[in-house]
Length: 236
Image (cartoon, rainbow, N blue to C red; front, top):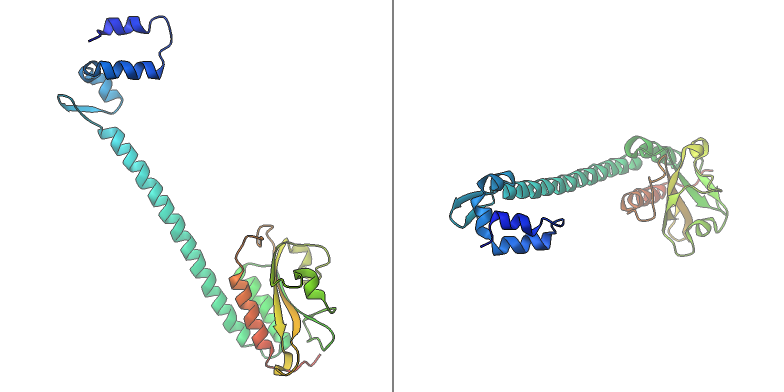
């Protein structure tokens, strides 16, 4: 067995490296076991000969693992609460929309619930011509929906862009938008071909709507709007 003096001589001429220290400890384990003050400093306790209790070190690791688990659980719970709150607000918004008395009231209610319940700065309904455009709705030229969503696109989420003149006085506040395609049978006449339309939602936050974000809730609101709009004929 190497003595402590011999150990000092071993590393006297150079800085010790861990492989050397580890190899030395493997060859001389009793030297470490006999140094109780050092063991206590590094959080180890000797209970019996050749038995080392990793008390403080093990406890520290367990506490860190428990803290990580608690943080992960809290994040999951926060996300679940946020999703539940969003779904609740969406269902309440749907009930508000279903109480609309005409097309104009429907557009007003859509804007109001978007601001009050979802923290947005505006929402609008648009429909392509030819054909009557309800008061309070935005008129689009034929092909206008495809121009923004593509021929087969159903939704678009991302930053606000030039030419999207749908939000009236609130346009300057909008930083990101969600556009949802709608198929509209105004007046409830199913025999006629559906007219393309849009439900547009504007957020004051640049990251309020992003391409990687799910759009199920706003799509649900847009679907409710389209169905409610079928109740009345277009009065202009």
